[in-house]
Image 1 (spheres, rainbow, N blue to C red):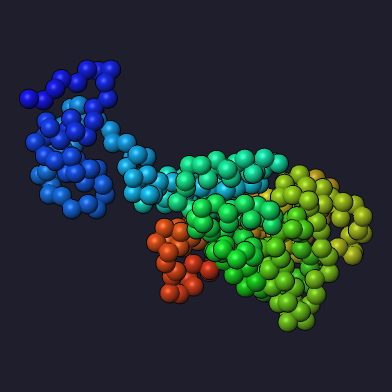
Image 2 (image 1 turned 180 degrees about the vertical axis):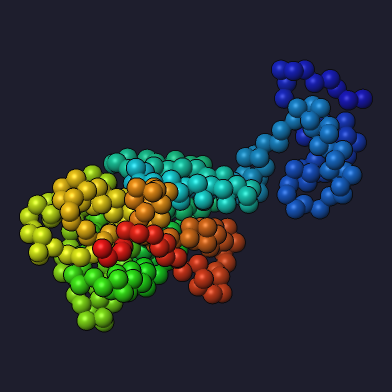
Length: 336
């Protein structure tokens, strides 16, 4: 005889099994994607579970299998729209595979306690999304129960750190060829924080391709952070300090946020000036009619899929298709 379940009591797997006339393990399989169970048995279990308002304790079940199905997602620079694009893509892909993302914001000085939280929850792995990793942070991560670590959209050297990012060097060369083909003669590059190792490859590829085409990287502008206002100020200072006859013709910005700041500075500081500007990341605002920013899309869908496969399945793609981003041609690169 099945016991009555009051509204204040939580139904258990045993309650569902008893009423459905199946074993407790059949109930467990009914809620496990891909588990071996007949359609008839699954439907019966799910119907009874709904009737009893039963919900499986996935955390307890995962811990019993020594797997929590929780992935730590570590981020900084959260003001950057590209960070939100990465977060959207990785959470959707993780959820599609039955995993949950534990968001870890390491902006500021409390990253040790933040990483400790991930350790206490026994995450199955950690994804660093375009995060600037210090040696101390890498050491903390590598000491966390030896869980797999994958860095996405940035290059970082670490003995136990797997890196999934596009070929930034080739992307820089693509940008240089595009601007040269437009007939530009003098070129500049706007860089972000000096510690951003992964983005240096874009600059190197850009400079090397310019040299191969018979040109040089004439000007380097700098911003301390990936911040639109800092991009604006860097470009504004350059325009104020440089006579029109000596200015560059085209500027490659390390990301779209800096590029939008540079475009805005042109419009407000020196309206007749027409310096071509290209960016990187293809954030939503880049395609806005008022900007029409030519940029480079990293194909986050491919990068995240590769990173998650390495983290969960410990598999690496046989080819490097995930390393190839795509140029997004609009109008900001055009020569007047």
